[in-house]
Amino acid sequence: MADLNRMTIAGARDALRKGELTSVELTEACLSAAEAAGALNAYVHHTPDLAREQARAADARIAEGDAPAMCGIPLGIKDLFCTRGVPSQAASRILDGFRPEYESTVTRNLFEAGAVMLGKLNMDEFAMGSSNETSVYGNAVNPWRRRGDDTPLTPGGSSGGSASAVAADLCLAATGTDTGGSIRQPAAFAGITGIKPTYGRCSRWGIVAFASSLDQAGPMTKSVRDAAIMLGAMCGHDPADSTSADIPVPDFEAMLTGDIRGKVIGIPSEYRMAGMPDEIETLWAQGREMLRDAGAEIRDISLPHTKYALPAYYVIAPAEASSNLARYDGVRYGHRAALAQGDGITEMYEKTRAEGFGHEVQRRVMVGTYVLSAGFYDAYYNRARKVRTLIKRDFERVFADGVDAILTPATPSAAFGLGEMAESDPVQMYLNDVFTVTVNLAGLPGIALPAGIDRQGLPLGLQLIGRPWEEGDLLNTAHALERAAGFVEKPAKWW
Amino acid sequence: MSIDLETAARVARLARIRVDADALPALAQEFNTILGFIEQLGEVDVDGVEPMTSVTPMRLKRRGDEVSAGGMQDKVLSNAPDAREGFFAVPKVVE
Image (cartoon, rainbow over all chains, first blue to last red; front, top):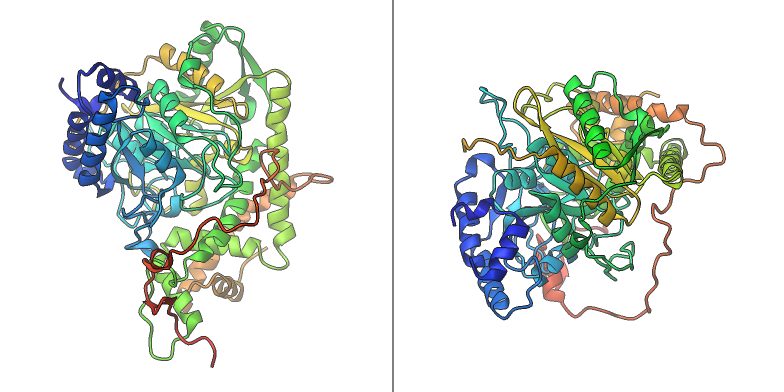
């Protein structure tokens, strides 16, 4: 078999079980592809020895029969996940040299299911960014390029390395995390599938915290079926995360019937943005037609507080970040600044954090500090939390009216050039998440999947938003849309 | 609402991030851009709306008040920039 690294999880699982290939062969193919793809800067720590050891163990388990679906599947892991004995630094200088003594619950679940880790993947520092340009490791690069143009493009962010690695077949799939769109926006920019499950589906334990009330992990994959398989292996109740849901995890893959007859798909008028490229408008209209042709009922809906989601997010997320990132003090792990004669503990904190945090992280920590400070807490933080209640209520209303899922564009543009936003103010970058951030604020599951190619030859994604805990139904609707869209394009290899 | 240099310096101090004096004007400008964006929230009628505390309607679980892990001092200290004699070492705190 040629190009094993190009396989899907489902295809590899079936071939492994039939004995047509081994995890060792599959893993070697991915390691070679990853090794040769330095130009993409997707992998920031390679773990070939661990990968080979895990692959051999997976082969032994498969030979015994009764191996779970993820057994022997080589994955890339976002650097935000703590992996025991392997550098895990959230793409930040402040965690330079940090090697966790423990394993995050999500990666432990994957490894217990037999998955293989190829290495750690690039990302925006502390998952704060939409272009992977805030990483201490430098930019990850999108394998896609505009037609006839060598300009390096962003793979999106914050899970930019994950998107790049999956799109370029440097792994079969990757883990991502999503606080405001960090799985779905890069998935859309790289022509792959990414699902953020309902808040509480995946344990946050061992994932470096950004904004705890919004953070969720999820899979980034080459197909909806793969997303269903991998999500099932990642999630489940965890006593170590008090917000982890103690409810059964259904067999998501078994729910992919492709039958969506009678389902009601909502189209929110507020997601029609001024200045949105006509190609995205067209793609959205095509998505509606595809779902209608598949037997769904398309219904116009209103989510009136949509406009306020981004401003509410840019209060709540920095506020939580300022609290979460207070732990980086130069005492227990990571970087400590060299101190001058007479420097005390306050100088140690201030110098360590100034050296260790990049510009965007510093900015968000300080904005968060400001909105939580005496005199502004009510005006900013409490008001934002009230607006969050209203945003969630918008969704609850339409779901109560019988809507099963909501179709929107995934992003307001295709992938842009690295450095193109450098002169813009921070708010311009924040607008990347305008269609995805509502989903985090409301705690809902959302999936982005590739649905078309723009005039420049770049992938465009659509997003489906589901009811809480109904990832299975959401994945099934996505599966129907995926079949209708028939997206099969891959980036031409240049790296 | 406009952030002046003094406020920017105070926020940096509260956040325990050293910002050089010559970097304060640009920082204050960025704060103002972001806060200007956030100001839109003032348009929303939030009378009688409860601030969200939990996005999913679930009770936080309780566990028994028992020691569940421990006895791993070496692991706890293994990543410390400066650990001595089983402790984290820091500059002098008390004069």
